[in-house]
Amino acid sequence: MAITIAVKWKNMRKRFGPDEYYINTNRIRHCLSYKGQLQYELSHERAYNLFRIFMQKEMLLIKFHYYFKAAKKIQTKFRSSIRAKQARILVLIRYWDKILNKITVKSIELADKATKKICQLILKIPNAIKVHVLKQFILAC
Image (cartoon, rainbow, N blue to C red; front, side, top):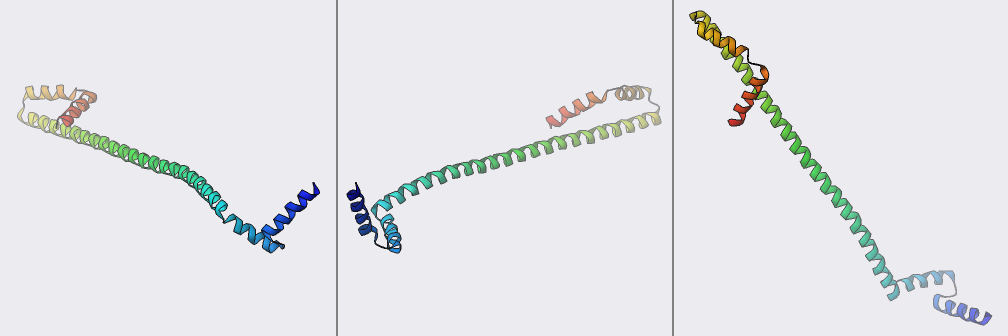
């Protein structure tokens, strides 16, 4: 047993050198040999695979960010179109009231009882019906 240890120690000394400086330089040289190159390629491949997984996650995050940004843009566009429709409806309701007021004033000036009656019937129309009719008008245009 002692002989095998001594032989191995002697071979290690031949292989790596008598000093710690030589041992370390020879170990570095040994790592950069063919065996070291194979280990480098394996470690390079492992690092590449890990990096690829990371990049896939990163690309996934970028895609999520892009889709969330697109969804937010669609939502804001949809909300702005709803606000625009509501604004149009409000303008049409005000115009409806303005025209009805003009017709009523003109019927009072002319003392037209039939037109007054029609204006009173129009005034009795609920706001929900007015809004629905004006929404349909906007959709038709």
